[in-house]
Image 1 (cartoon, rainbow, N blue to C red):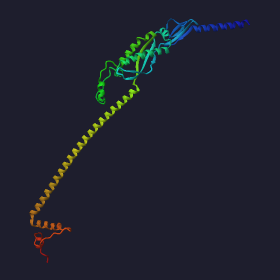
Image 2 (cartoon, rainbow, N blue to C red; image 1 turned 120 degrees about the vertical axis):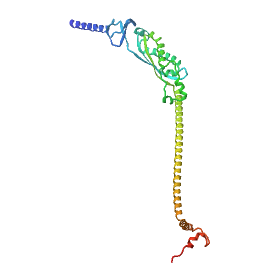
Image 3 (cartoon, one colour; image 1 turned 90 degrees about the vertical axis):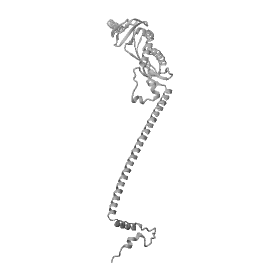
Image 4 (cartoon, one colour; image 1 turned 90 degrees about the horizontal axis):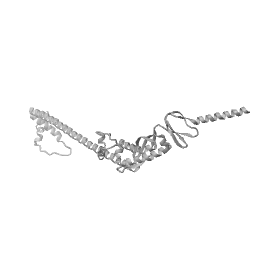
Length: 319
């Protein structure tokens, strides 16, 4: 009986020692940092080394925080630019817990830190965007103006805006936002590493107007191309018509030359044949005229002593 009681007491003592040791020892992972809290208040320095550490059991507790970079993504905000163009601005940032004790005292958790970053970064971004032109938010100072065909495709009314030099670009604006936000954030034990503008976009009402302007510009360029094409087509057709008239003129001239040469040769042949026997030629031509002079729809009345029938009258009948 006594031995069983002793065994139970020993077991209870072992369990109690184990629980006390477990409450005394804690492990810190790589990439983490910790603050020892005693009666709700931080004590000692920030523990940043990974490994096994000790604390007073039941009196002290451990608050563990990240040492690595953390991501902040703000909600897109509708902000007017300096030129009164309303745009959606979507911003992101990278931050880390630089002073865990100050972080615990001011924001307590990462959720609280995200809420503070929402207020601070959104306010700084709104102020800086409102003091900047839209072209400065979109372009960088090192941006090179396109040349050649790319520049020719841009409407003339947009070319002047495209060539306009800017004093600062998107990178400079984000650096100013980062600098202004860093002035406020350290009091919360936070180090702001970087701030970037992820996306810029027009609000819906402005976007529709931009689309309409883009459509109008494309239509104007298309009309210009069609006009140039029609002018070029008329020029080609005119050139073709001119060449066609020239070809026809040359062909007609060649035909007339060939006909003239043929008539000249025929006349020469007729002349030579006529000069050989003029009387026979006159006789032949008279006989041809007899044949050609017969007409069923007309009647020719001649006297018998007409010279037209001279060869018929002179002809002697065969015996």
